[in-house]
Image (cartoon, rainbow, N blue to C red; front, top):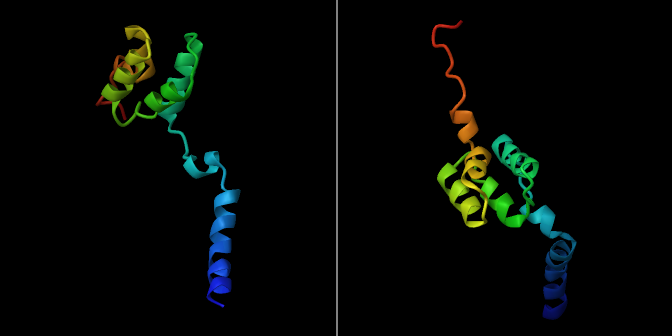
Amino acid sequence: MKRIIAALIALPLAFSLVSASPSSVSAKPLTKAEMECREYLSQKGYVVGEKSRTACSFAKTNVGLCRYQLEVLGVSEAHYKGACGARDASGPKPDPWAG
């Protein structure tokens, strides 16, 4: 009887583990900065694989880490700065008096 109860309890857990795909488990929405980083690297001719996607995930929250990880991957300085957000910082400053 105990074995039957244990099997009935374990059955839904086993089914949920089998039906969950790796992409659905770790899927999170991409930030705008992350998408821009990936697109920028792609336009510059880089292959955007798992490691560069991980680096781009820090484009908004930790620019230094994003740049470092891309530098380690061999991305040029101009490109890793552009990918991780330096292009946004160099843009025109907003007019504080504009309404």
